[in-house]
Length: 76
Image (cartoon, rainbow, N blue to C red; front, side, top):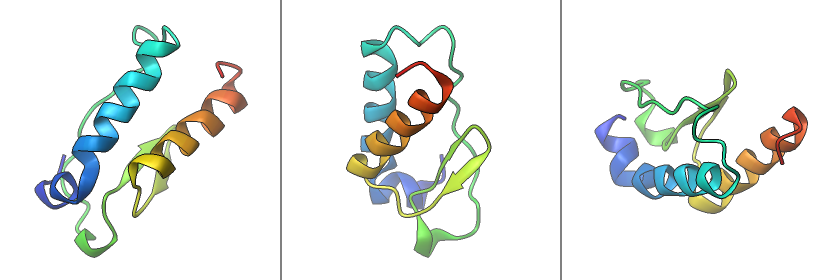
C-alpha cells in the first residue's frame, strides 16, 4: 500500500475489507494484497476490485463497492 494512500485512509479501508470478508466467510476465497504507489497521490486512496480501479475511496465508499461487487458475483 502506498504511504500516501495509507495516510489518506486506506488503513481504515483495509479494516473494512477484512471485516466484510470475515462476516461473509469469504477470507479463503478472496485474495487481498497491497500494491505499490500508482503515482496519483492526489486521487488516493485507491482500491482495485476484480480489475476495476477506484479513486478517492473512503470507508463508506469502500463498503458500498464491496457490496456491489459481491452482489454481482452472487456472494452478497
